[in-house]
Image 1 (cartoon, rainbow, N blue to C red):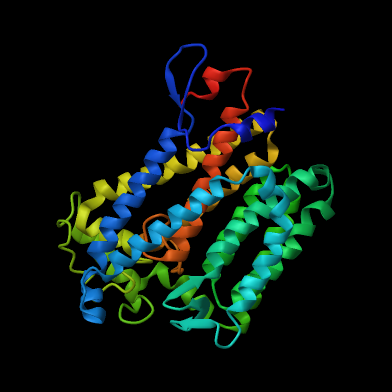
Image 2: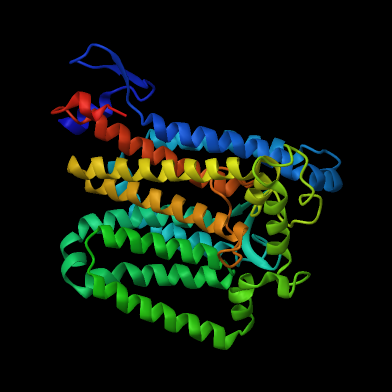
Length: 401
């Protein structure tokens, strides 16, 4: 009856009157929305600023990438609205099918005429004038599948090695396909997100230690097979040793941070984006932001991502307390994913992590990333919406910020 009542409520209504206080209250997490809107809005401003030089040179239109980003944003919002309209029960049933779709999506990039190579990597599928990066959707679908698995096999995950290892075999298959592209950053984020969800699902500590040993062995093997991977892995430790080759991206990013100081050189006044810093509007957008708007704004962006992640984890915790485990794991997974990807991108920009091709969620230029992240936010809002609407025992508390 409670599920029917939640589905019967109009999805378009963002407010509802509290029976206890008679005042109008918000049925969505306002702090989450504040973080999302702030990051997406600032992202549009920085994409416009960081891409003007390269857009002018390539197309003759300084705002070419901004117009495309606005189109991507419109598509992302439309798909997010469609995702929000689907009850979480349906996403739970669709989990195994989405995992099969993951394999299909990753195989598509290797089909001649469909897969598209960019900068030596086969990560994209070309649809007309649009390139789709399939790994962005793979990370989203893995979370939806794994959340359902943790609910269906909760006891096995907590008590047996088999329950812990079964989903890992599927993840290893996806990881192999991603490594063939290659897309090491997506593999790292996907596996770490999965491990975080398994930990929250009750998996035992020694299982994680064994898995860590296995992953370390696999890393050593990859390095032995291709020594250049060790050079890429350790190059960030001293980028100035080879500033015009392996350390070029990082040294230019660090120069951008140094020029920005506390308050920046001014919006649009970046020098590093003028063909010095590669991928200034995608992977290294945060460095341009730090140069133009300074350390204060860069710290604010980090705080907004922290707020987003904390609200996602709080939404998951409240769903778990209301006996909605699938919704809880989805919220946990989305929060871990967004937090890890933001941390990795910012860490790469600041030189504390090896260079990886990961976008900054909600901010970097790119349609695939924007669509996947906005769908993830929509599912977070759906979890929050269903949890609040199904809470009849403490209505006022459930609708609090």
